[in-house]
Amino acid sequence: MTTDATRLPTISPLSRARGPRSVFAKTLRDSRRATLLIGGLIGLLTVVVAAGIISQFNTPASRAEIRGVVDAVPPILRGLAGKPVNVETLGGYLQYKYGGFFPLLIGLWSILAMSGTLAVESSRGSLDIVAAAPISRRRIALEKVSGHVLMLAIAILLIGGATAIAGAAFPTLPGDEIPVGAAFAYAVWLGLMALIAGAVAFALAPFVGRGAAAGIAGGLMLAGFLLNGYQEAIPQLAPLASLTWFSWTANHIPLAGRYDWGSAVLVAVVATALIAVGVEAFVRRDLGATAAIHGPRLPRILLGLTGPVARATSERLPTGLGWGIGLGIFGLVIASSGAAFVAQLAKSPDFVRVLSRLFPDSDIGSIGGFLEIVFIEFGLVLAGLAAAGLVGGWASDERSGRDELLLSAPVARPSWPIAGAVGVGVAIAVIVALAALGIAVGTASAGGEVAIPVLGTAAIGLYAAALAGVGIAVGGLVGPRFAAPTVVALTIVTWLIDLVGGDIGMPDWIGQLVLSSHMGQPMLGRWDAGGIVACVVLAVGGVAIGTWGFGRRDLRS
Image (tube, rainbow, N blue to C red; front, side, top):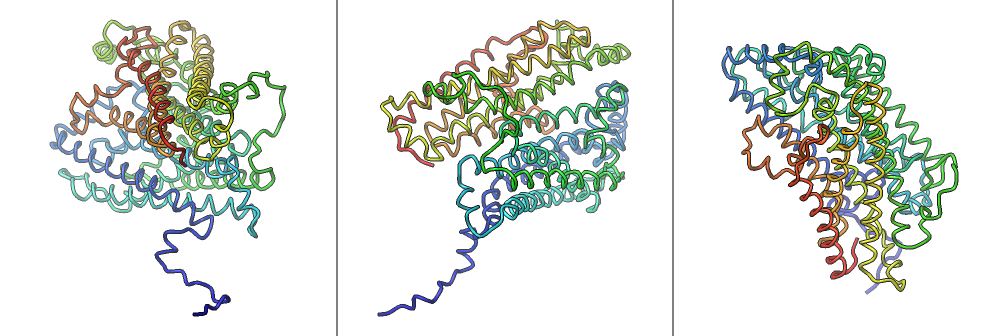
């Protein structure tokens, strides 16, 4: 039997689908699960929340009550979710109460995806082989970005379709119907808000690395969200708020029947410009290089030359610095506006009494109380995502095959995961220190008590350490591929339970399982001992379990 060596093998359509034949196709394949998850999750939440709204407020009197409650909320808090337009209708209330928070959720996904789309493969060396092929580096970058944009568009289609279904299935009163055009206009707005957040991280990643880019972009996104919400009540914040994409699109409220497509075009233009910066930076720089300006030499202990712990610390430190800077900026912006919050709150004694019932025995009408309401909730989300990034770095040694070389040295095998965990812990300490610095400067500038909020910042460190422990346990027992995704999932699920749990009738016992509900009120000096113990147990126990699991299985990718 003979074969024709010059005849190329035929590739079936199924094989083409299984094996990507371009950078663009590989990007689509790598992102497919995350796309379906984020699009399906937000779409499902939209349907479930819409059903909950209709079930609770199904009479004209109850809708009038919604309007009255929203009008009674002080401006300092009412604007946090956006402009209250037509909140007595299903679409208006849905966008007011939840539509402003969904851009944060999808934006976090975009930041994590675009900050690593080139930076991760550059640092691992996997792009070196691709770049050696007859394909330009600009094309590699453009195909990577195009893949993410297409997957983002697919997620948007899922969300728009779910919103349209909710708007057609649940209306009970006149004005509740959500037209298909409005549903997809809302979804497009969500996509643009996610794209520009991810574009910031994409532009920064070639210069500062993935972890730092994600941290800074996340901090800027949350700071912009809050600046936009507070600018009406605190006019001094308006100049800063006008620089954020949340402020640009403040009048684009499709579910409430109000459109501002010009602002959406502005967001698209700026996002495109930022992506162009990231592409050109990738083209003009060496693969894997991040620092454009060389600073002073690091201390010897931070160079990673004195042993496993020093090496792990030096590798996790840039990620810790990035997330710390992001949280520090976020804390500075929030704390510095605390005095204005207190002044505005004093004008609404009825609302102060409501808050006093929710926070008994606490001075909620103080800068510390303001930080407790705003900083802790979003700070814990950022801390969880920072922990995911650090755990991902910890797991990357095994996934990249580096551990096979490291373990050939005459060092006990358990010392490597423990050293990596110590490096993660040092990076978390850096995050807390920078966040505390931002809180201290902002609180002092607002004339508030500094010591208690600064000590309260330790709560985000405990929370991050606990989630990192869970990730290390999963990575050690199951494999490195699942370590960081587990931490991301826990962070997002926890936040969503806090956000929509009450409106969808979630049982109280589920809320009690959430770690963030047991942190006490640290910004007011009130700590929950059970929560502290739980964080320490999860952190230390997770490292112990992960080390045990790492020592009992074969290395894998």
